[in-house]
Length: 227
Figure 1 (spheres, rainbow, N blue to C red):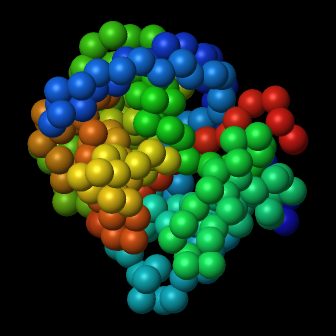
Figure 2 (figure 1 turned 90 degrees about the vertical axis):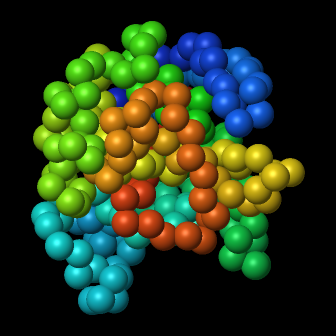
């Protein structure tokens, strides 16, 4: 199966992150990478990971973001899409089905780190958002009660759509291993979120096995590896 999935080139940079709960801040150097312009859609997900009829019977367009996918589901999808595309898989999944190691030298599809995600979301801007919220995001005040077709709002300056609103997006990182164990980070706000929850620095968390109706993911790839 030959899949040519469009990806935007994201330049490197320095990213300032903060944890408001712990009152800590830190800086991460981000190398250039590739990021999908839109979240993974139901159509793409089901083409790679066929689901049972009751799982796939979501209302709305097949071009809406896929939801009800756990972090582990997203990891498995990345590996399967990499295989289908002839790329090296990024993730080694342990026998327990929950231990995951990332080979950062691999050129396959993967989840962005939260630093990569925030850097791509801001796209060179400095504020809480890259534009006026109603123009760039589907959120509680304008959404209509469900995820919307991807790309329906204005993109950020780097051509990325729905970085804020529509669906939250899983990132690679563990949130706080000491306090929350295996919980992973997700970013960006969603169709069900209040305006204040749709910002470039908002951090949320969930267990890697949990599936939520306003949480999906977006594909990333490392640069200058296999093709």
